[in-house]
Image (cartoon, rainbow, N blue to C red):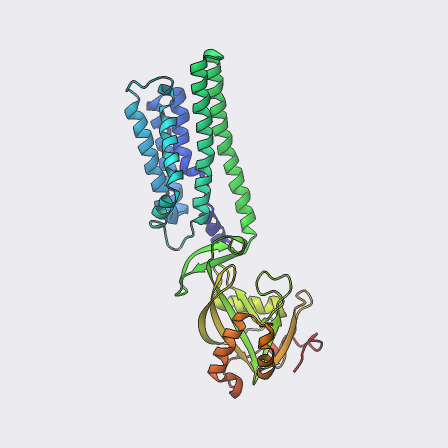
Length: 387
């Protein structure tokens, strides 16, 4: 649970922390001047650095980028402070400088994302963090544009005089404070929700983990990710045991597929995934030790699969649990070939069928794997077992 929590926190980092030193600098500068602004914001930078270094070291380089931007903007404000700036911009130099930086970031977003991605840990997915950061930039940009516009309007029209300017600044400070509090609450709620979701590793074409993403985001998002999956072919001489996917499945609904298949979760081993899937689908509690056959990759409408293909042989019967209600059936090689043209099998299974045929396991019926699946799921099988 601790590793999962850390994974979620790293994948959904609070974006307000990137802008906290700047916000503190702005607020203190407006009320007490530059000297106190530096005195207040520098400890915030140090504390955030220590916080991220000890708890989120993978994000340290990313945080250092936002810290560098803070020093540039604050330093620019300090340099321009003694310079005569045309009113009404003399009181909002820092806000104007920050708005320029935000505007450039929004316009050059792809370049900024590429720059950050090239310097982050390759074991960490930054898509959520980058989206959250730019979401925060848009919010702060809207606040800055509104404040600069209203401040300029009050100056040139003279409506309300000095009291109107004071009221406007108070409202500006209040909005910044509300934004900070809201973001802290929102991120906390999102993290709690993410704790309840299933997280999948993202791997490259060599099967090496390069990131992670929640399964909902992966299946519903615009981008495609490659995820590791386990696939266990249950065979008995020249027969293959298949499971019909439900009509509610997001992928290959209503098609016949390999009996034991599932996504490997973050921090889960292949063996643990096989055991979990056998338990969830068939109520199997025995230790299953299938024979590893090969790896292969495949593509669906929403994702890529990096499949670990196993074979489980000489199993007399496999049933289904009452809470799963999945239809199962033993298929002979001839039955499968007679029905291939009807498009009732998943493309993954057809790929695996060719691999199994090449191995000779179907014809020879030989395998040295330890098959305990048959002893655990005999009950309730008669209605679906067909030769």
